[in-house]
Image (cartoon, rainbow, N blue to C red; front, side, top):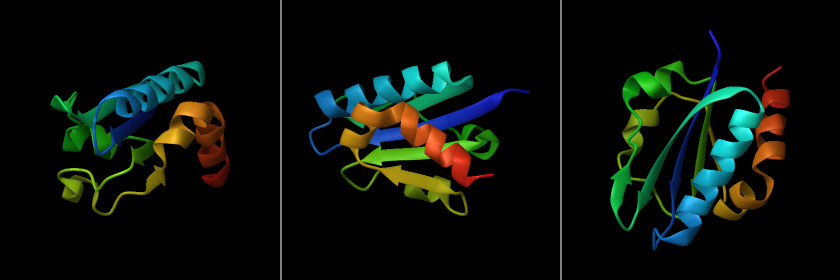
Amino acid sequence: MGKKLVALCACPMGLAHTFMAAQSLEKAAKELGYEVKIETQGADGIQNELTLKDIKEADIIIHAVAVTPLDPDRFEGCDVHEITLQQAIKNAKSIIQEIEESMK
């Protein structure tokens, strides 16, 4: 069974930064060998919504947000790593590696 990473990206406008962060996290996660699923909460609503199963099976959960995400109760009791959208856009790979290191 492979490693799984799920992320949620959201910003106030939900236009460019949400999707840039999602793209950067997805690329970095795949490079590091993760199966990845990323939910975006943007101007077009919730896309690729994370299910409870997705969340429970994840090895790493990242919230790259500038607003409080919708339906945060889904993540209750989970170890969520919250970062900024800019961190996700600029340093996704190193952030994932730092999270991996902190889990050892």
